[in-house]
Length: 250
Image (cartoon, rainbow, N blue to C red; front, side, top):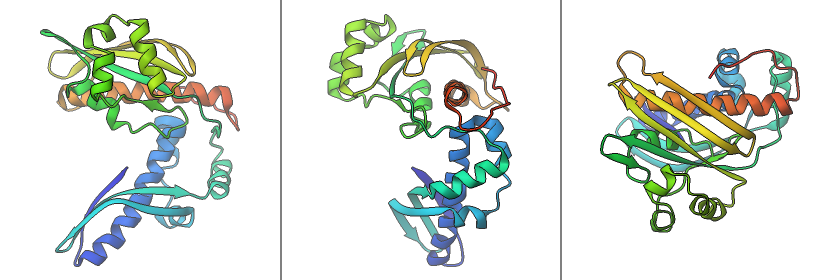
């Protein structure tokens, strides 16, 4: 899911530059997943040539070209031993153990009622994380006919155990959690996630605001990302391969 859109003198040159850009973006995503903002900042100065040297494989999911332009979505894999060596050199704590899968059901409250499956800022925020392959995998249900028949918005908002359990089983997950949010003004969301996930009990309830007037959409993305970062840090602290000294507030 690493997206690139590059312009250059020729389409071939644009594709070449896009591959390097994809490697750098994938590496930044890796750093964010294993340690949140603190680790991402620590690894942000790794030169692109070293990142390229740690590349295992790259595959193209989607691509299109035009005059002097390349647009693509790629999958990037790095060499584990070289990544471990780099992390050890920098003293970055990490865990290679994966948590069980947790299904996240985003419930968006509006003045007109609750929304789950329709497009809304909160569902979009969780989908944008693309966290299915992170150390703490989060699955957002597809919202197809099978899902909507099983779990209505009202049942999700009321945390109906039977309906939620059916969704959990459908996605072969270890746990399912309802994450609820609502807009507060034009740039803030109040978000909470209370329940038992694959990494244990979660109790998050806080307001998140967008930066520079980014609106409710950005505030929702910040909230979803922060929730996942906290889950990642908790998992890493419990399963780390090296000491972790940083803390990450909700």
